[in-house]
Image 1: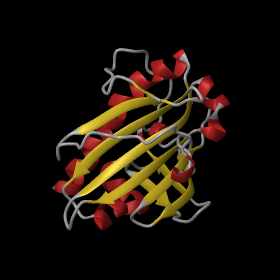
Image 2: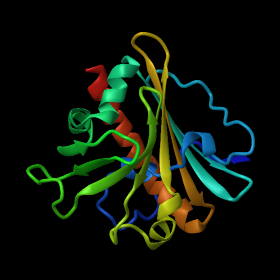
Image 3: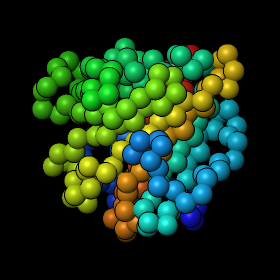
Image 4: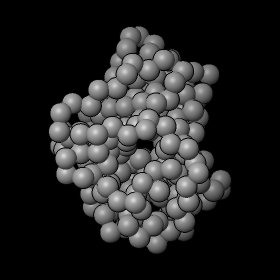
Length: 208
């Protein structure tokens, strides 16, 4: 297992899509099935830090690991991901959440739009444990790069919620299923700073 540069700048070409950045990280396999060889060890983050790193597995796959600590109880952090009100508070102006295994999180990034209108983004809920883990898989359309559409069934995001006390929570996001290809390495230069920007919005909302 090889860890790569922990922070990639936005210098590469961005994908030709208008999809939410979190939905790209919203591409991973169930947390118990992450095919890493050995344990992923992250340095403990400072409370204000958002840390990103790429790990290459023995199967020549990339895992995008992103971590943030927020000054909020785990229950409040969970609501930000597991309820429509939570999503609309920090991520999208329109959201609909059907929280169950096999359910969906549907969002639209145009204020005044309706779920189901063109441009609706769909995240499938693969599995979840309340206030512990949420596994999501995005539905990809022709706005997404071809390499991602080819791998749609294997790209998911595992989000782990770790309580650090009454008013502090660590969020760990594992974006998995990416092949170790130049196309994905280029995409990561867009995904990483875009996801970090969304984490900043989430952190600001929860700590306000």
